[in-house]
Structure formats: structure tokens, C-alpha cells
Image (tube, rainbow, N blue to C red; front, side, top):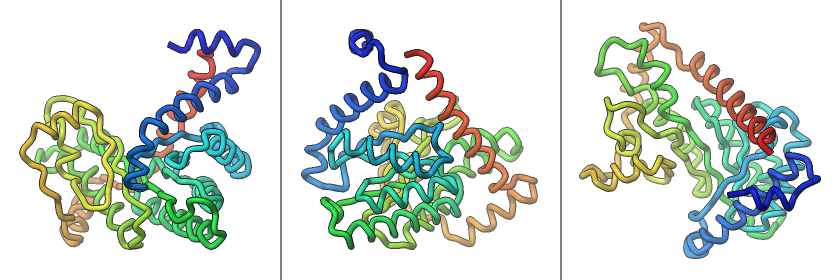
Length: 282
């Protein structure tokens, strides 16, 4: 579908071609969604990520994020930044410049906390500087859910513990974010698709219907949720039960931080590889 557009860009390098196509697509999507944003400025957003090959370079990432955001020139666009040590600095700098942020690849409560702090501080600076739309700035902290279970479930014998780690961890991250009580920073539950036939397709939606949150589920999961009867808002599993769960996991030699570190590394590698493969195809 991009062949004609690519042909017209002959002579440009692969990244320039990618950016031209991506900016057109994101701008078009933002236009389609803008009516949602206009009726409720917490809704109707679309995200674009910075070149993942720059993720460890704060200055270049900030420059690219600013350039991409202003090239699209739509108020309902978020710039996506991985939740790494460099990423916290990048998202803070972009938020300070009045840019909506999607903090991604969040696997632990400590990452969630650092993202919340970076966004809260950055948005406040933008508001103090009276930047355009600074009172409407939005941030989401994307907590990845099912990837935990795909790693852990193969090591758990007791069936009643299967597919629980992702939910428990997501609730821990959600609670950390909500403790800041900032209306314009929300938890976004990502990686909520179900693999295989052991769980209902809407499992990760059903378990995480929490106030002040978003769920970016695959279409088949959304359709399954629409057809299900369980649409009631959920309450957090109490903290003592969650702590007991993690102690049980430790006894089974399953350590959240070790798995999270692995998942973050794998996520960064996947982002970079996908981007490199995309550029090679151009």
C-alpha cells in the first residue's frame, strides 16, 4: 500500500522515507481521532515512538521527539519513550516542552514510580511556563501484563497460580501510579492479548477493569469482552494478599525483578530489531 509513496521518495535514505510515511499516517490517525479529544481531552490519542536506536542518547532522543511532535502538529499525539534510566530523563525533558508522553516497556513498580515522577515534574514545568495546551497535557504509563505470565507459567505446577503474575504485578504498578493522585497521568495496561486456549480471550481486560486506567487490547479480546457478562469495575486485590503472593513466588524461585529485567532487555532488542528490519525493507 506504500509502493507509490515510496517511489515518489526515491533518493531519500530509509529513515527519511520511514519518517515521511509514519508522520503522514500518524497525522491522518490523529485527525480521525481528534473529535474524541475535542469532546474530552483525555481521549483520542495516538502514539509515535522515537527511533529506538537512539534510546540511550538523551540529547538526540529529545531533539527527535520534539521534531516529530511538531512535524505532526496535532494536540492528540503522544511521543513514546521506553522506561529506562535514559528514558526517564528523555520523557521528563519532552514533558517540560509541552509534549504528551507514552512511557512504555514498564514491568515493575519501581519503573512505574520513576515514570510518574518524570512526567509529573515535566508537566508542572510546562504549566509553569504557560506553554500552549499545557493544561491539557496527558501521560500514560504502559504496564506490560501477559508477557510475565508467558515466562512464569511454564515453571508453575499449581494451576491456580498460573496467569496470576501479570495481574498482580500490573496491580502493584497501578497502585504506585495512583498514589500520586495526578489526573493527567494514567496507567495503560499493554500486552493484554491471550495466547492459546487456556484462558478467555478477554481475561486481561476482565481482571483489570480499574478506574482511571486504559487497556490497549487486541480486537479479538475486545470483542470477547463485549460479549461477556463481566463488565463490572474491579477492586485492587489487597496489598497483604499481593505481598503473600510474591513471597510464594520467591519460595518457588521465581523473582519478579530478574524476570522484569529480562523482559525489558528483550523488549528493547525487539523494538530495535523491528525498526532495523523496517528500514532495510525501504
